[in-house]
Figure (cartoon, rainbow, N blue to C red):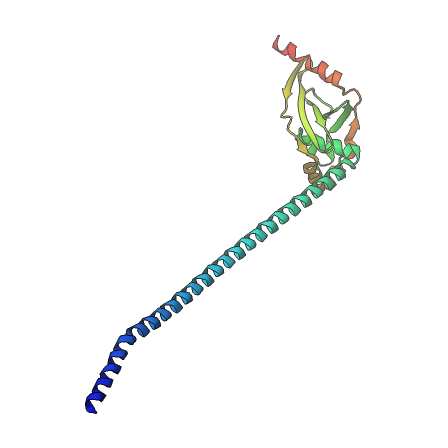
Length: 223
């Protein structure tokens, strides 16, 4: 009887020893698989989070750029509208006042309050404006030739008497001076310019032909 029990017990132990490694292996494999799956899920989650964050940053950057572009466009549009309004306001000024402001580009004496001691003669001939400030004495008062369009004034030339028969001719820059600048100048010292209008008078003999005739005296200077 004891011998039989010993045999049965040995068989049981043998079976237990034989199956235990398989179960351990299965358990280890299951745990390893679970760890792998968990790691994969974590990696996928991190990748998804990174992609979402990158997309969010891209969207934010894009929105910021769009907003900046819109603000720049609005600012430029606003500045353009303001300039157009000032040009229109300049063009609606009294003719004598516009001539006076244009003359400030080429002759600093046009800035004299009330033009005290001076007179400003002008004439429009073709596409040109001719202006001259004179005190009524002497010959050294330059006659200027200016061009103009809807938005700017262009100083072109001057002839100035050296003696009764000698004239100096100078070519000016020709660079555009915006009417916006002139209108701002007027607004800053409105009273001064308004007080000068009575000294601005048309001089119909200031023509292109007269200007060219005055230039012809330049030749006699070198003879």
